[in-house]
Image 1 (cartoon, protein in one colour):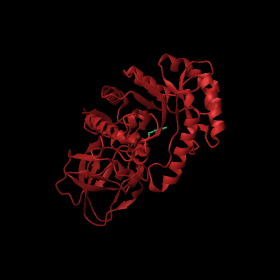
Image 2 (image 1 turned 60 degrees about the vertical axis):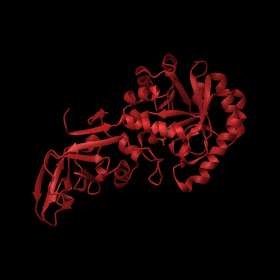
Image 3 (image 1 turned 30 degrees about the horizontal axis):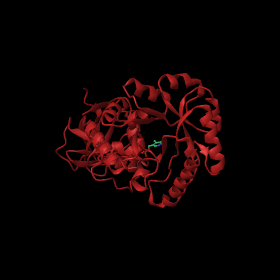
Image 4 (image 1 turned 90 degrees about the vertical axis):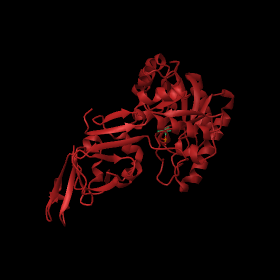
Length: 359
Ligand SMILES: *Cc1c(COP(=O)(O)O)cnc(C)c1O
């Protein structure tokens, strides 16, 4: 392998995270592993079969390509597409036994008579997808109509502020709205009723037969303010190397746009990773890396394939030293905070140019 920019993913850690969270859920509830976007950049083909062997029988993805990838990598359980698939793909959904989320009345009607497996999405306040649940009677009617058009096996909603303390009232309102609809259609005996994401399952009383776990499987917090349960650890470390070290003198500038000016004698290390690897340009003059166990701050702008860090305080740093871009000492949450985003976007954004290693 070319030692330029790579991520190391601990499959054992993902398994431990799964088992730890699983153990905290009621026995009546099953985990649906959310492995969309290549398992948040951690590798769906590698992780899903391993989770299946550990007893996980449900998987969620965002689209048909991801769903087919899972089937072809040996997933035999339920695969739910959480996002849009046009009815023109109904034959593929049936052929691969994939379950489709129905986004609204019109989307449900477009699948009439196709015989696909489906779950109704119910909108309890996020205003993204789903049958409007603000009028439970109308929502009930729409679910019943959908049940007459496809093979309906589930009902779900999505919580949009379950991760923060000030979202409590709204989340309780979403849960109550969902429950009202679910109870109205109890006689349909839909086996899969679900409303919990990682944050919901952590912070609210369990409701439903499935918990959809995404970010926490990978060991990251839904929100920086959250405490993770004991034993849940980040599974991914992103690494690179020092390609060269040089002296920079007072008055000289570093990188494109000359946004950093040296005010003293400096030692600067160059790292061969850049925004084409998914290393956010928003980290320019803001982020840090870890070399020999200590942080080195980024100086100047992130380039497409390289960036520079200040190692003036780390005189032992040499070319070919290993660098932690994200991992122990500078977490995905730290990086997300410095880049003005969330850890979800950091891990999903690591590009295919970065080698992935599973251990
Ligand atoms: C992505 C997603 C999830 C997983 O959310 P996490 O916060 O990563 O646990 C669950 N449900 C839906 C509908 C999603 O889109």
